[in-house]
Length: 251
Length: 316
Image (tube, helix red, strand yellow):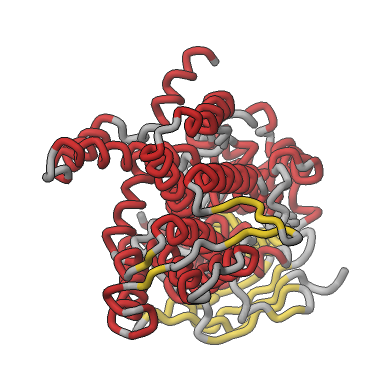
């Protein structure tokens, strides 16, 4: 269990002349929440996209367990247990809540050639979807159309779908974005419950939430890793204060 | 997502169709057989456009390739064997769709429409400008293919009543196959990809492979329709692959209702019967036809299939 869940090293991504990620290295451990902080434009979402496979890195390597995955597509990485959620809610609005999760669970055992099977009658898939809805507290909403959920519930559904794919490593891009205090508290509590069985990378602007759940924090500025350390050391770091927290305090 | 078709209505319609040849209207038996072939063609495009969300404007290519495959395989002085030529024609159409799909599925939306159109035009000009299939004049099919089991003729495609029932059987089989696919994991995955491709990829679905499978299957089923059309007309020419054929079949799908399997059948019937009706009144049938199509799209955006759904809704 000392093997890290995910190790990215030297990740670089250029967009033309802009270096959005410059030699970024980060390590995620099982059972721990690793928060990623940084001002807007620091390259946090780019890093998530590089890790998830939505973007191909210009250079660098990513190891998931013992396997090198930098050359694989997003779908393959997902099937290997790497799941992500999106900063902007990205669900199937015209499908029911249950179907959103059922599709995610179906991704585990796809068997598309079974064209005479009834997709919605598959016990194993339904059980996985129901369990994910139960964990995220959406079980009672299962029959509603996803588009009719409240913003907070949609964010929860986003997480439920990632869980239903069976992901062990979760890349969560601002799961608290746009949430009220009560919804935020519920999400923080959910993250705490998920932490023991997962390796979590959490991108989040809500400082209270970050310091409440993070075991480790990486601060990025202008595409580079400024500092990685425990929440206490990050809080105490002069460099971080100057580059990031300081600028916010001035505002 | 629920897609269950109105089974009762469809069953009654199938029974009515099956009884139709008893009326002895030979002209209409042949017309309806032709319409049912187009219904198969439209259903194959429905899988692509309505289910997978890939609107192709080159679907006539697969129809025409299968039609040409039959005619080019058929011996000159005796009938071809249906058990060999039918699978060969369907496989030829599916294989061509597979190869083209590998290339065109890298594009989306308007680009996908343009690239599928371009490939269909390439096939059109292969048959139009080379001696492969008689050039722009086309080729005759001298004998209808024969379907023999242990030496016995199972049915005679030259007999218009037999041909009618073969077409009806093929249409029903294609409908049932596609209805099964819609409720299968494969169909649900295609629904997801139509709604949000990026999300499906993030969930772990190899989107391109699913779409290629749908594109190939749609090509093969369009090939089945093309094979039957060649049997019925006894003649093929490059116009079978022309872009306005691709346009017509897309219109049938839109008229009937994008995304509803039985909509493709309704659309094919409405299209053909309107065409027949207007053509019997005026030589300029395309004018009233255009007006009707514009009106239907404006006032019934869900297509003809949405009428049945509207009628059913109050009860449930």
